[in-house]
Length: 324
Ligand SMILES: [Zn+2]
Image 1 (cartoon, rainbow, N blue to C red):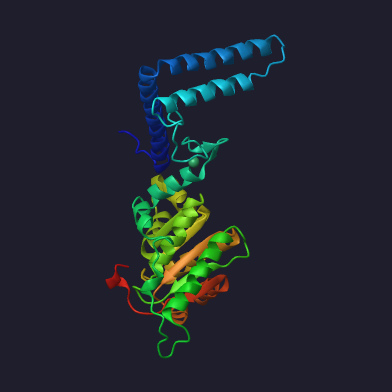
Image 2: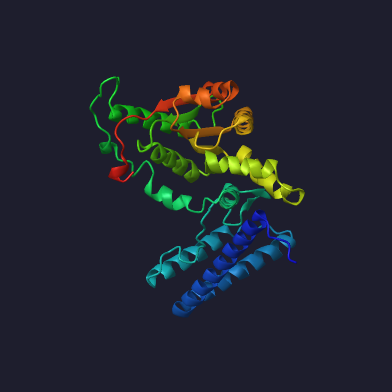
């Protein structure tokens, strides 16, 4: 029987495919261009010859600088492309990630795009990009929030959400600062918590950070899978669990909806604690108020959660009917 392909191997294979596709695209474009603009084939040949000439000269110990010649040939190539209606950069590879040129590695270290891809596979977040295209700071509509101050409140929903946006953007700006606090959003469903979390996730992913986004319920599933895994599955389960510790940002959505008991409570504590010790940021959303968090979890979790978190309450009317 074939050994099951691990997530890591699957991602490696994905990157192999990406490179194969780039090769195919490159060859197709070259064929097309050579056919329409034969002089470009000649220029490419001259570029190659120049390289060989340079190498020989270096071997003979001669002092060579062919940069100017090379620049001239490249400029001639671009000029010809443009004359024949191609974009000047038509023959340059277009990468999804310019950092690693879609190889997944930079000097033998995994590129952040590679790590994020592994996290996506482990945590079944393939849908995330689509969601984030719709829910981000650019599509965020302040106009949905009322500017009326309700009884018993000190601030209008609009002023409140403005403050949360400011805090969120500060969190992103100072993301690598160990003194910057984590964020905890609480309030009823439908007040924009998830939208705000998605906006933060989008910006940080765009900046090249790795982000894991899980509901508390799924998160407990992953932890249990690791803690109670059979011997043959332990390596893969541990790798998956380790990503919870190593990802630049861990988002725990809907804290308090998982079934809570002594085990889950102490596991959540361990996770939050390890991440805090490693200066890794956490973003939590919950329907529970701080008082309810204290009741639901142990004192250790409670103090850990409030200790290194800036806590924001979402207020106002349910926005779900407005499409949130
Ligand atoms: Zn990359």
